[in-house]
Length: 345
Picture 1 (cartoon, rainbow, N blue to C red):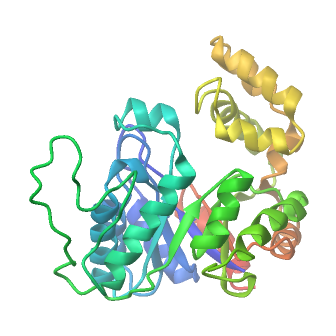
Picture 2 (picture 1 turned 180 degrees about the horizontal axis):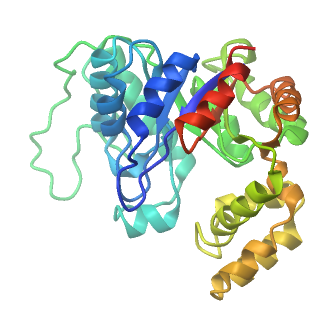
């Protein structure tokens, strides 16, 4: 099982130590470095800037939001990063949620599965560069002939010859239909809040996609990168307390009360009552009470916290559950160095 460093997205300011974390991750044997975006910093810029100090690690987006860019624009970013890095780019895509898509990007959120299929298809056409890129739509028609069109649009091929036609595309997916689509059309799954005890359920979703006609991959060559808080500590109680606040935010506040994909993930794990309580408290402004309502077992279903022996044991559990890469975040180089021996095991 490989390790990936998740830089995430920026908060109020750029992180002061990201550059040294990236270099340390490569030195420690990490396989990849990922950057994310929400509604502030983008994902491609940090990978290009900090990735220029590396020579081996793959550089991935986890994830870039589809509604932020047209498919052709995203393909341009990906092929550019792939050339600059010598063939190390991974394009991680995700649909985000309606609050961001409609509130920030001003785009409709409807039919995310259809949009994803079209989007990936156009990106692959650009990377293949076998013919001028066309798409009948309805979400991303190329050339555009709708309202306001001049009628002068023409199909084009990228001027730049992509370095790799098979640049890997991974999809961030949380629900059963999205995961099945990922197994069908993508090269890997970016799994958030993965719970090893539910591996059988995930396998059913994945196998549905692998079995579809024209599926791109099989289980043998498909990557599953699971985001996981892996913390080596002699004081797990303090770490659990810190993470309670994070989980309360994502379960109670990251998404509309009517549609929160993160909350749905934990409902599938059997935490309906807890999700209801956390959401009710958080939405009413009682954030401390919402954090207190997050039970230890909910956190530990999707995180590994403890001393080195415990962490080693749990990593084997995640690998046996089908995870091919642990995508971890670390606050500083010291914590990354504590993980280094586990990367090399």
